[in-house]
Length: 143
Image 1 (cartoon, one colour):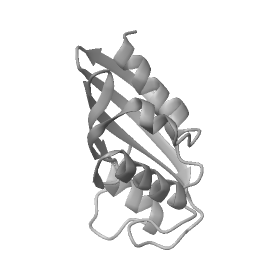
Image 2 (image 1 turned 60 degrees about the horizontal axis):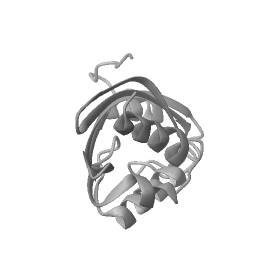
Image 3 (image 1 turned 45 degrees about the horizontal axis):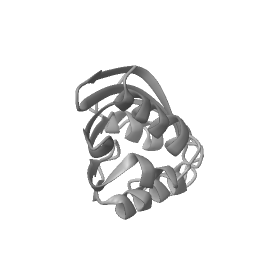
């Protein structure tokens, strides 16, 4: 494993899964541009930390499971499984107490050994189906 792959593992296993906000200053470049799995876009480390607070408010036990990780030079790609319990507002949906699970993929670009760009796609339709139920005519999403 290379340095960038190790940084991404720390990013998920310690910063996100353990909610260690202090790691953001060490792992993220101050010019970070980030699009999260829930569709939010933020710029800068302080905005990124606010995004983490939003996710934690919605799902305090939010967990990122790395399924596959590949790195090449300044880019790392990750396939993930996200799980959590919906205990706070999310997408305008009041807390349901439901346990959710959805998949995603992420791409990280590095500058000076820090994450400067993150682009994450998550199965939003599957997440919404779990939170509010599937609507008529809407395809069922399976992982």
